[in-house]
Image (tube, rainbow, N blue to C red; front, side, top):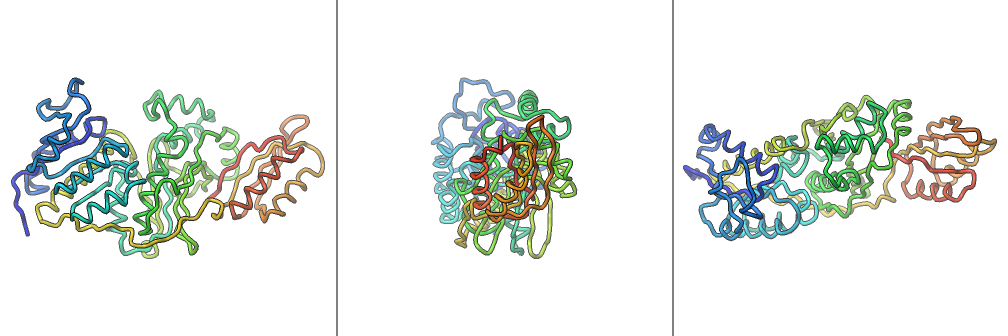
Length: 429
């Protein structure tokens, strides 16, 4: 049934970088809206924390600091939540859905931890809750997973979904600079926040991988279930050895559907130079997927920023507007209809790159190999180079091994007098 609304009103919650980008895009696209959605599109309200603050680019007449003014306005059709964080955003979304409004959000924190609440409310009340911009900025990944790839059994997702860390690792690889220098450059250029913890420790990527996993595998995965390991321990020496072995190092979000459960983790990884993700440099993002019918697909683009993220939000707004016009809101139901266990990191299997500083004397390599063998770790490649007059650098790449077994071997190394330092431990694709 076609509603034939002449105008659709929206409210934007948040006037930050992304909120400003969405507001500008709507203004820019006004002439095309009647053709795109069959109606004009009006930003009726923008919720801000303080009306006293100057908001360049916004019409002051639409600004409000009163959520109830938006919630109780029956003419507002869509709420676009761009505040971030779990509260009060979660409460606002639930209240908006119950009040009959459709919702677009870019809130990865909320969706990665409280998806059952907000998505369950949307399903219960027959509303749209769409969130393309929550993962990978301008790259379309949520909608393809929910719709275009729905005919597949997805078994693997692997992605570079944090631009800050990809920029840092790219600069370390390209120039030989250390981590701290690359981070300083990323901060100066605006790629890294003043407090970069969420990015460099893998938390941002972990939230995005949780969201993608829940949709792809149809079973709820929350952020606390994602093993996260950041890039702060990656050194120029690790980068150099990776190159020698034919790899590059990337911070990857990895999710796999196995016969024994879901593996979901974020950590640095050595990937072959010929892999589709290896060439993704600077602050770009990319997601690699494998499905039983489609085989392999890689999607790449800008994963953050004012207009790349606003582009994804705008696509969702247009999608919801079309649903409103055709009376088909709420047609995408809650995807988590399975209950698959999430494996602990110790239950997962990985290949490893291991760099040790050891005493340079006969028998040490044999001792190291014996410890690995006793813990079920098979060596694929080993290189030994002199470090100084008394020390050698031993670099090992293993075959796939249970993570718990490898961890047990590291514990033994920590107690060996011949091992001066465990200098690097990185997983290998």
